[in-house]
Every structure is written in structure tokens, then in C-alpha cells.
Image (cartoon, rainbow, N blue to C red):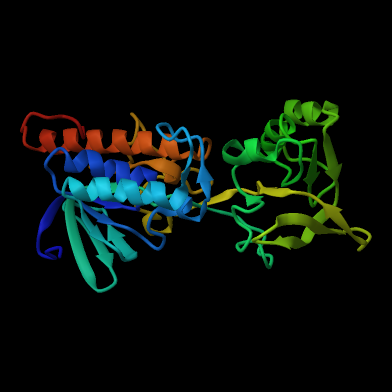
Length: 320
């Protein structure tokens, strides 16, 4: 049980690949970090079935199993786990203060790994069929759709990049976009239009997802926003590419963010407040992979440790 009066060397917020990796590295440095798991212990991978692109698992591994293994590894080296949700932070002075429900935690260094939440369509069956035909990651799941027909929802760069990747495996990729013009860059638009495996449904939205957990996705219902006409489009998978929402509301007006709300970092994982570090999807709007999140969690842990060592050196100029 954590001591609320203690000033921890390091507190880690979030328990996905970035958070657990940061915990493993900090714990092995004899810092005995405290990790506050957040609303979804294990992060987005707990909602994923088979993960085949994480190194070290040639046969693949279920997302929840991978996260449980990371958790056990972090605990083995002494990480203190607290399963609760952080409601407020104050980062204006050290020690930093973190409130979780009615408890106050304090630390000399903070590692933020709160991730990002995918924007979803909000349709019935969407979450029920997540990992069973509904996906938010073409890089992760494209391989499973060899010889099948899929739908990509969105009209930006990510949607078209997903469509290109899927076209290497699927027999047909239909991009569903609510407007009559793509938001993606000119080069991506030209390439998409020239790809004979990519089709477009303009001015359209998905109003229903068809299928069940046993069979997976079998199709979608489309509605044309200009004419009101609806029709059924058979498909084997739906890739939602309408963006992510970084989980950074706690840090508004305390840490620098970009225009999309992602924490901005320099020199790897350093935020705008000395002693506060960020890793994983909370500061990465581009890659959003388990392996890159884990790598940045390692970086944050090492930079946090160097920061703590620097505090003991009166001549250290790390924070200017």
C-alpha cells in the first residue's frame, strides 16, 4: 500500500506499453516507482486480440496477455501499482502533486504515459466487433485481410495511408468520406485516385455495422448525405481513421501542447516542465505503435533517472 506522505522519486501515469516499460526501467534503477494505471489498465492493447508485430513473439500474442506480462515484469522489480484514475495534477513546483480520487501523491519526477483515445463512430456493435473486423490500426491488422474486402473511414492523410497499406493485401478497399473532397495532401490524393484497388464513396457515412462476434464484420450500411439514399456494402473489415484524442486534459495550461493537444517534447521525452517527461501516444501523433511506445517509455525512464541524479549535483545545469 503506498504511503501518501512519501515523496516518491518517480510516479508514472498510465499503464500501456510506455507506462509499463518506464516502470520496468525505473524499478531496475532501484527507484521503486509508483504507477497509477488510469481508467484502462493495460491501455488500448487490452482491447486487441492477436498482436503479431511485437518483437519476441513469433506466433503472436493476445494484447491483454502481453500487457499482463509487462505488468508482472514491472512488479517483479518493485513497481508499486495503484489502480485508480488521476483527477488533478499541479506541476508548478517540485515535488509535483497528483490527486487520485481522495489521495494525494507527490514525486520529484513525473513520467506521463496517458496515451490517446481513438475517435470512433459511436455506432452499435462498433465496440462489440472491435478486433473482430473493426480496427483502428492498419499497420497492426492489414495482414489479416489478405484476399478480403475492407472499408476505410476518413479522408485525411492517415486514412489514405491506411488504404494504400491495405491495398497490398485486400482485393478491394473502399474509402468512405463524408465530404466530396479529400483532406489529404495532394500527392496522397493523386496516388489514391490512381490505385485501381481503391474505390471511394463520397458524401457518405456509415449508419450501421453488420456482423457478430462469431462471424466478425460482414458489411456496413451507408447513407449518402446529399441524397439520403442508403445501401448495404458487404465487407470483411472496417478501419476507422478519423483521428485520436490525446489524453492530456489534466495538463492543460501546465504543459506545452501542439495544436492537436499532444504534449510537445524535446531531446526525446522532456516536456516544458523540468522533471516531467512524456512517452507513448500522449506525445506521438504519428506512429502509435506498441513498440514505439515501449521505446519512448524506456527513454523517459532513463532521462528521468538522469534528472534525479542531476538534482544531487549542485553544479548541474540540466534545467537551465
